[in-house]
Length: 477
Ligand code: URA
Image (cartoon, rainbow, N blue to C red):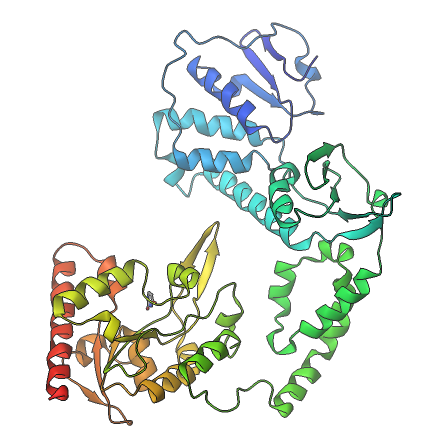
């Protein structure tokens, strides 16, 4: 029987998948079956190499729908999930997806039911596939092989848990476009010669080279960037499971580096290299230094430090909490949705943003990764306190007359203690350097509200900005 045949046994249908990751094929057949009202328990989805012999006789065609235009419900969310789950190695994935598609026809919101067993299983599969792809991006290590003509070909061995190799090829083509390389895996191989991507069948580990001189160099580099002060063994094992260590030259060093970490950390403290020395005296120097700051763990996430922005002699300094996703990408404060609320309120109050120095209490974006999204996490009191070093340095240079702290994190950053916004707002608080602190709500708080509560908070926010504008005018006289 060829891969493309579907076998009908009475009212029982079998779909033979041509490839283990062929989502488009599954989608087309699933649509056809739903249009013909074939319930999930009447269909078997058989992977290549799967046991289809149980169904090896009978009618060889799927039913043809009476109305090929009959609309099938499949939300965007479901399709995204299904496209990913199709790469999982669980032999039941296509049946499960079909069962979900079937249920979506009568309950379009079924995916929202987090207690539903099938929904949970699909979401777990989705996560597992993403994680596998992430591991492949991070842990493929090429070893150089000299070709007969004296050229260089790079070969890597990788053991994916799921059928992700073909799908992830694009990542490696983009990243190593000018190299000739092969990634060998037990689930199939991919090869790039600088122009064309080819595929071949499964390989064995012994097909891949076992080490080359470049690895010594890489090991030395890894040892030199390994920072014992940032060692979190649990997190490291989670990110870099032992399973991948054998293919990574630097992993041979890990036990030794971990064992020596404590001593190296105390040596670093003794040598003063864990602390920054003198406070930078120009905004440019602060900008440079914050990018290297690892005083708290936020700086070690995949983000960039975001420096304050505005004239170095501004009378008004506005302090927010921390950059958000968009600010992190742009490298500028308040350019995302909260920035738009702020800009609109400043305009209404008659305050020119370009005459204002806008900065944040915490310089790096703190988040948790959820799939492709990075979800904002509030900084802890300790993280805010550690970051005071930087905005105090900015304040010492800008010397604003008025500082407006937006939200509880910014207020804490300025005062060194937690205050309630509703109690602190509306009155100036004298700061040690002679400037005045005004406290208000954070614009993103307004974004989370609606109805009367939103209207009321917008009114209070506008009133706080108007008071700051008035105070600036008084101080300018
Ligand atoms: N929220 C903040 O507190 N700061 C920004 O820069 C953006 C959003």
